[in-house]
Amino acid sequence: VTYIIDRNINYTNVCETLCAFCAFSRAEKEDGAYTLNIPELLEKVKETVELGGTGILLQGGHNPKLPFGYYLEMLWAIKREFPEVHIHAFSPPEIVYFSKRFGISVPETLLKLKEAGLQSLPGGGAEILTEKSRKRIAPKKATTEEWLGVMEEAHKLGIPSTATMMFGAGEGDDEIVEHLDRIRSLQDRTGGFTAFIPWTYQPGGRAKLKVEK
Image (cartoon, rainbow, N blue to C red; front, top):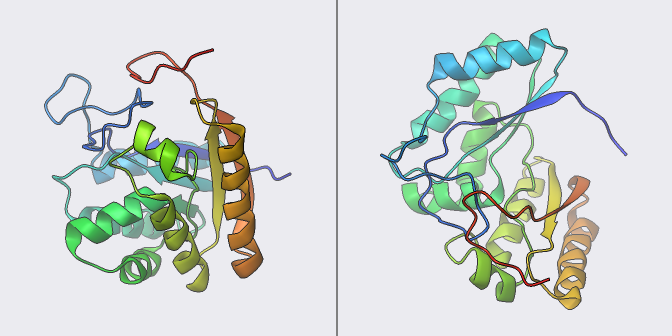
């Protein structure tokens, strides 16, 4: 069991992935769509520090209008203004998206982000690590192998991470067991996971996924 005071900052909710379970994402010109600029980001970090926070979790949508420099600048700015803050940022689907969008290998993407200030990766986007579930609820998101591959490369580069599981979205018990086994097997090889965070799927809002009771 671990405990930390931090803040989850979603830098943009514009996303082209359109996962069936998501109530967060917006199209580029849709009402409620946003992308934080650097001053807005730094103000949120400042508020966190003033409340005793020591870490920031940065995640966001797959926004096709943002250049790679935007992500690097976020990290540079936080480290410049708040060097004591731990930056926990960019889940594996984001790393895969950056790699494909900007034509950079996953290891090179991770290394550039680490050099800019990234210290650890959140385990978001795992949902259920089976292709049966992923094709049903998030067909445009990183595959099981891509998610695990990003984590393995991060661990090789000395970037620790967490692991997650979103359950209750219609998966079978066998898929939950497979998910846990894949996480456990990678941890046996790398030792890079610092925490495991499971949570239940929350229906409602704009989510389009319907789960039979």
